[in-house]
Image 1 (cartoon, rainbow, N blue to C red):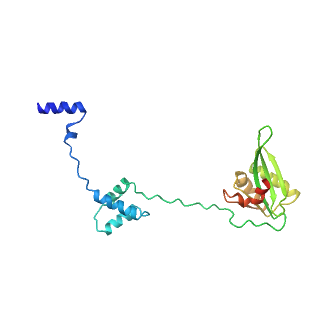
Image 2 (image 1 turned 120 degrees about the horizontal axis):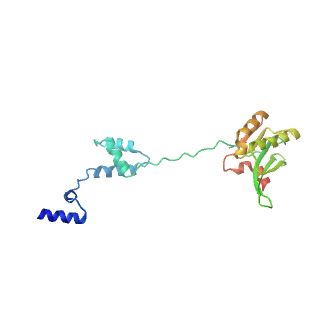
Length: 206
């Protein structure tokens, strides 16, 4: 009767007999876990491999997999520092050339017409004279479009040795690279997010 009443009581609360009689095992990892945490907080840049070596140096005969499991359970993984990418761009001071047609700066400015249509303006400035070499207004400007404008300037006044631009796709694509190679003009891209490195044309744009 006692067994039957126990089964009925367990069924009523949704518990099995094995769960009732279960005795939790003693956690044999308590001391080791605490030591791993202490080492991890003391040596914050050490990963699990170094923690394991320190434990062995202390004379502990522990399995590396066991150490790794406890290390991960405590969420002690070292966060790797992200290396800052140093963009390949102009790092030299912004020097003003001494003669016209030595160095030009180019930029694309976005604007809207009175009707609200978006337009782009290709602005080319001579860094020595601050002259607006060209202002070309289009609905869209591609690398091929920039090359065509430069070809017109080549016939009317010649080309500089170097042209400085930002990292816009119209300046960095294959069309401009091929044009620069064919015309022996060096393209110099500024660092991303550093408009001050293209200050002459930026100041012209206002």
